[in-house]
Length: 516
Image (cartoon, rainbow, N blue to C red; front, top):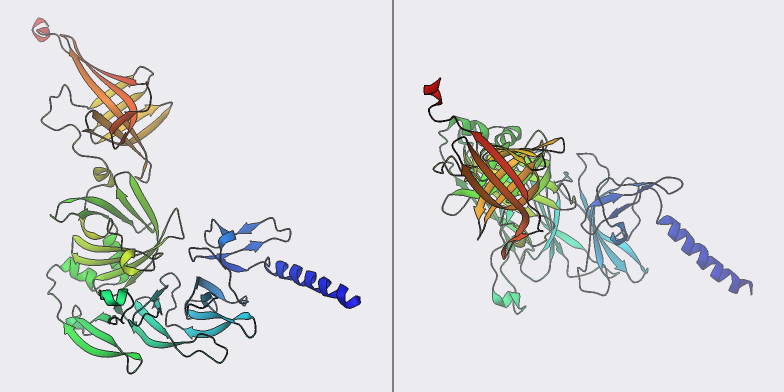
């Protein structure tokens, strides 16, 4: 009887101890978005803080193995690497948070003999920078097996790439192991060229062509610093590794502009200062009429604008690769687990080419955001000049109907128009912003309110009627605004209310000067 009693008691104690182990202070867990979250609890368990942002810790995958207190988790990916019944984990971590410590990749596999998860394979990558590190699963060699691809950086301006290929033969315990088939460090760009593969590969009938790896770096010769040294690595199936097949020197263009030459030959800081401005995306016909991007170096902030859409990113780190290329790692200011990489190449003193890639999307081609990517022109205009339509009231309009000057409403509100800007005084407050008009079946007026950081914080849309009554003594201009919104059917009023503003211009009586 004692044995029958002790067995359930032992099980209860074991369950309680396991539950307590899950609430230990300092346990690092992961959100679904692969952002490290560190939980900290006080003695009474009433306080919880996070190193980074997390909105859903309940769904966060936790490491399937015990982690040492000195191990700093970078990311955790939970997936099935070998199509067996149990999922595997890839845990990316550092031994400490020091800048010089290398990032380590652990493959966690289920050991059916010991009935637990264990580290089946461990690899120390060449990368040290946590912010720029990215891990992807990609069939680089074309044999329908996913390689672990680790991209990152070492030090300030050195890019790293590690490609890890799964060994077909498992260990005696039936565990996964990998083999590094390419490890590169380059003070330049490293790119996996994902070429189109055949339909036979896509349907699984045959293997596909392997993807070549291209490493490009600026020449180390001072007199030829704008030349590019390009190295091509190809998969050798017979050797089971990537080999350097071709090295070529690409002559650089002669840079006549001394300002541009100083930037290209300068440091990362000079590149960042060059970007610190507002840029506008050009269309295919070279017209500068697209979205905007504002680089604010002093605030370490990057903002994309398009109509009423704003996307704000924290500028976390930059790496200058080639003489004309900068890679920026940034994170969405509102949704911090959205990590983005910007690839920026200088074309000339007023032009850059920008590629926007969402790091949360594993497929590199799908990750490219075409709305923000493209050719940008530098502008010396202020942000408001482009946020607000410059076509408000053309110069050829009659001055009597020109929407300018001071207006007052029936409720005492005052608004001053100086296109493309306005200033509104209401309830003791002063609001500023931009105004513009257009026609979509009816005449529409929009007011875009901005804050002290020149960010649009609110947009109000109205149908408007403008009337002018002129007498010998005065001109009365009346502006009637009906609030509403714009949708696919056009303008829709939000109710039956309206606001009426008036401007009264006093006129000198005819002949008054002669009578004086």
